[in-house]
Length: 161
Image (cartoon, rainbow, N blue to C red; front, side, top):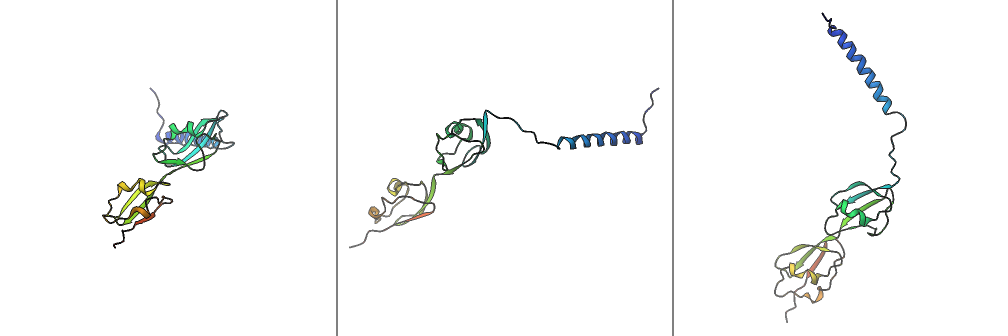
């Protein structure tokens, strides 16, 4: 017949094993941190208007163009202060920003409207998105260039003779 340990002895065994496990896990966190050797890869950080922001490991010598399929930039975005053919460096941070800005169009329009346009667009290229009044005078604003976010453009009325 087999003898069984009483419950208090089982508790003592459990406590002893727990103490050994705890001491062993502490030794894992002492000493030098674990470093992975990526001689053939670099790490870059991508933020902003992209589908997959965060840290990415890419082959050394890669350009931003090589990284585009991984990060999936949103439409109408561009990288800030870096060209697509620039070779990326380890630890580099890359930000993508929207090229669209809000433009408030008011004045001789049926309803004031907010348009999302690219910087550099001329108002005449987007005027089809605005319902103009019959007396709207585009001669003074049609070549006006969109330069900043929340720009306001007032379309004047023709002077009555």
